[in-house]
Image (tube, rainbow, N blue to C red; front, side, top):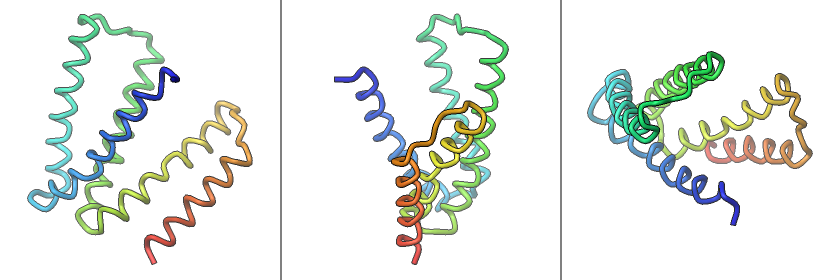
Length: 136
């Protein structure tokens, strides 16, 4: 079994919960408040990770920059996800936002020169078609 498979499957399950919990949160509090409390939850995980590495995180400047940009992009995306969840069906919102790999594939092709395969193009077309089917 590939070493990445169990962590990827675990992430799949956890992201499924991540996609579900916001609908519950924004039915009680507004999206901005939900984001603040999500950050509190993220800080708990971050502090746990810090303990895991023995308070000795790696500190390469470019690594830090891209990690911070990941956090900024993730939290901005999450804020808009909460707003969408408060206004629409969570099943459709999650499905639509789950198309983010299309953006990643395009950016990786442009900036990292990663080739885009015919299978990836077909997958992107199928994914976009699925959103049209889910929302119509």
